[in-house]
Each structure stands twice: as structure tokens, then as C-alpha cells.
Length: 150
Image 1 (tube, one colour):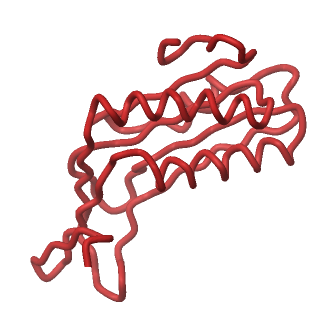
Image 2 (spheres, one colour; image 1 turned 90 degrees about the vertical axis):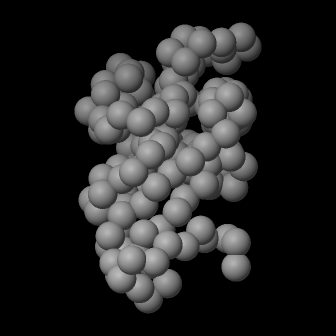
């Protein structure tokens, strides 16, 4: 299976990528659009200006590149197999991100909205729980914090 092709045993278009480049909601929408899909869900996780009650000036994401890319591809396949969706798009940024930038985009299309919402929720939850991507928060006062290391 490649980043934009069909996976063996799954009749769905799959895309997964880890990148330093800005993420495109339009590209995600275009990829998952399908004439047989009655539900399309596009989720973007964006950098917010606060965390744990402190002002944040930005984030930096780091990843174990080879492992993260392999796990993203496997997750796209898993989402398609579990939910019977038409297409799956998973992308996550690495590097420095400013407030308001998209850090992650999960998009799916399915025949019905229940499957589309379920697949998108499962995709983002599984990505955050299992793919080796780490976030460093940069506080506005100059400090930094690695969530989950306290």
C-alpha cells in the first residue's frame, strides 16, 4: 500500500502523510469526495493560544518519522476496514507551528453520516494515542512544556 493508493483487501482510497508543509483542508476534501458518499467528515486539529491555563505562543511537533509514517498508513487501512468508508485521509505536521495552523487533518467519506463521524473520531483518537508524534508547547512567557511528561 502506498500513501495514495488502495490497500489490499480494502476497497477504499487511502492517504497518509507526515510533513513539515502546511496542511490543506481542500486537498483532504477533494481526496475523500466520492459520488457514493452521503457523509464526508473533515477534522482539523489546530494550534490554540492556551494550554493548562497558560498562554501559548506556538507548538513544535517531533516524530519518529519512519515509525510514524508506517503507523499512519496502518491506521488509514484500519479505519477503512472497521468502518467500510470510501476514503481516508490522515496527515500530521512536524516542526514549528503558529497559533491557528492545522497540526492534523483527518478526513473520511462513507455512504452514511454515522460511519463517517465514527471513522473520523476513531482516526483522530487512535492517531493521538498511538502514533509516535510529540508536542512541545511554547509558552508566551518563554517557557516550554512537553505534555504527558509531568
